[in-house]
Image 1 (cartoon, rainbow, N blue to C red):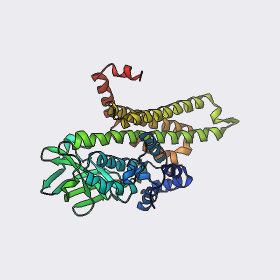
Image 2: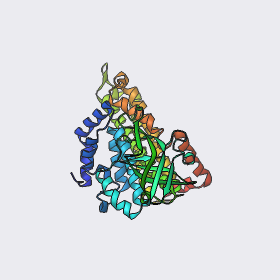
Image 3: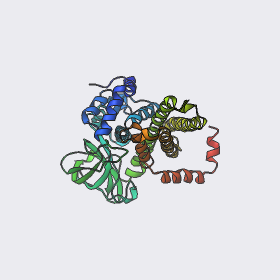
Image 4: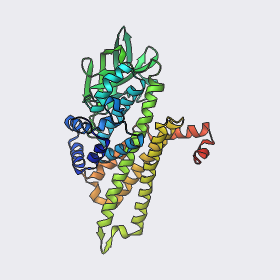
Length: 379
């Protein structure tokens, strides 16, 4: 199946069939490759790729809308959408024309699934602690190291690997195959179906033209640019989780009675719902505003993306907690949709920068330019 109009993506994601399949994935603990291929046929994996390379090149605000819909149904599939888009972005912006022509159509159509290989055991995602090496030998790159917690790393066809070339940070696109050993990571409660992997590169080779950017640009340019997008996408996913939890709470309190009173008629319940709605809508609006800033490559885009992720992940945690209180025992069962949303909300406070790290990023920007916040209010 070839990619179709962008509207088809939204139609599929809003359909009951998608929600039902997403529930099955979470229960089974894996999103099957055939289901990914099916969704790719509607253009899901090509929304950030330009039309010249078989993508639909949606505006970034529309891309975040897709991320909200996907995360609300399946946080696990959303993690694939995030990392796949980050790899597409890296190639589109930093790879050679030859690599763009060869790989972007494959990524856009889902014929190639890509994973983002930055995190390591000892240093986490700390670029300064990279132990992986990417050595050049003539026309060949040789990659050695271990990467952890790669979303959909178990079924990836290619990996965007960050490492050191001599003393300089670099990155390269490496195919799955000889010299690449893939092992499943323990499942996490919030991303049960994300096919997380530990990937060992044991002298894996790639042509030298698979380098993405020059040595010395791997972290400050490629990774930083990708992580800004990653934070925006994770923020959009967190906003989607908050919306899904709010919908469950509203549906429950509108119909549940206690004695002769509908639960939603109680003032305390209405107060909780109102606060949850404001938190959810604030996160969604801020994510869309951040998307416009990132798309415009504004100087403040990286900090704004960090703000969006901080705000939205907190909204996901607070709204799922409110929904849990309102649904009571019904929402505590293992297979209830709310239980998955609560677990996913916890994950979203950690991935792409924990809360404390993002607080430091936001505060550091304020302290560098104390008047920035006041000026931003008048934009």
